[in-house]
Image (cartoon, rainbow, N blue to C red; front, side, top):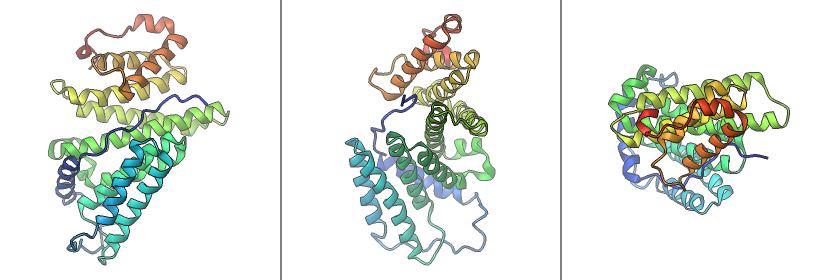
Length: 288
């Protein structure tokens, strides 16, 4: 089966970044009350080393992922999430600290990445959706702009998780179409998620901060490629050319740049006329 979307996960989460996002999660979580909060006990004090076992499972899972051992990594990420939950429940509480909730979300998210590489796209969607549900607890009143302002690291984590869900959904959609079992409702839902991911990335975009540009490019590739495959080249091709322009100065070995190039080749084959009218801009800033 053709792989329309992908991109290997090569970077292990930086402990410093996780710590920063964890602090943001604890702060944001105090003002975000979910439906499950009422009646739950407050997080108890954590004995030293309580989560060491789960942390070790995460380290082992990342090591397998770095070696492209996706099946083993997926099992270990799932086990790590379960161990974080078990350890929390051992405290006699159903509510974990923001740091632990974030760790569970990252375990689910990275498990989803391994599942994508294994071709288990529906399972990857479910894993990503679980991670999103956990992260949404820290969005006060579901105000994403407030999250960007108050906890930018956490906002970027949420956006990246949504990106992963879109990649998995698009792969699942393409597979269903190839197997002639396309579901109109699934297609509509996938388009909604892809548009949502693009909206989030536009909110996070800082024209003076190039580190925010690849996220926008990835969202453009996912939505644009999907629109092209669904017959809407008028919308999809310009998004794909914008993405390629944004990534002009990125190393050619970068998975996202390869994915953008793949989408551009698809545009050349499917919509040569539209591509001629919407060439790749020569200045990345023109495509932002």
